[in-house]
Length: 419
Image (cartoon, rainbow, N blue to C red):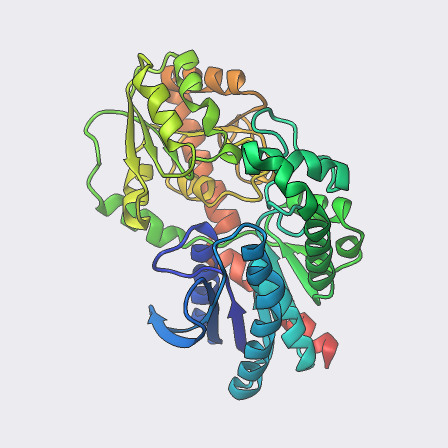
């Protein structure tokens, strides 16, 4: 097949969604398909540019986006949707594309529109809550564990506060635009021939929160990970530290639960260093709290994929305090594949990766998470058992050789149905 993957992010510099798209593309190529990547680049000069990564042709589409809240979102959504649809339509015709598979918020609606213009199937993968939340995270308070119950006008008057902080009253006139933007994305996504939800929880939430999505065909297929290559990379890297350490790896942001990170390790009485690998808006606050703590907390800053793998492969345990509805954390999958014992908050699609007492420990509150960390620290046989079962589960469920054939079967079914 000739497959077009429009994606918001793609290596070498990207987060988990970009690497998941790359692994899908790599797996499809290994099975004999031709894959073309298109990546919009907002806030860059307008026009089409080309680059390559690992043999893939990546067509970048530059598009202006002024650095003004809400106006920037309009340029990255409504304006980009229209322009990118035209670009993709031309590529479909020129490259004789047979199926289009959008990968994230900026590219899914244009993927559907361009595919239907050309009378070919459109698939979209949903990896977070962008179709049902303007902010993509269901967070409506600056703290607390309760997620937004629904995207009504009254709830939007609350959810703008943690994002706009003291300026939140100025954002209230934008609520009609926010509601319209969300509706347009839902209708656009709902028109796809199939939606791939990466976890059972996110599939259920999409259906429950949007009538447009409830009626759509939805398949639960997780993100793919090249587990063999990951393990080889982990084994080949030298340990970053010679002593045991706990690890937090990810963005330092409210939805990741990092507000509670220092207090959690204090309550756990953790006598190993906690390495915090990542960056984000909460870093300064966490560093200040860490400086006042009697626990040893080290900040590695943002790390690339190689360094992240090294930190994970040699960690004695992974701390996952996320309070946002994680759709399906790539960090959890990779740590599981490497056999790292994990203490995680039970949020979103996390139970698809962490089966409590089998492949890790799940908790519902920060205090309970601290107790799980304490338990793992003091029970070496438990760490070994959980790590071993996590390795087996990750290989059976998330390896590229398992996941990509599921995507391929979906493509074939959609093409046969349309024909």
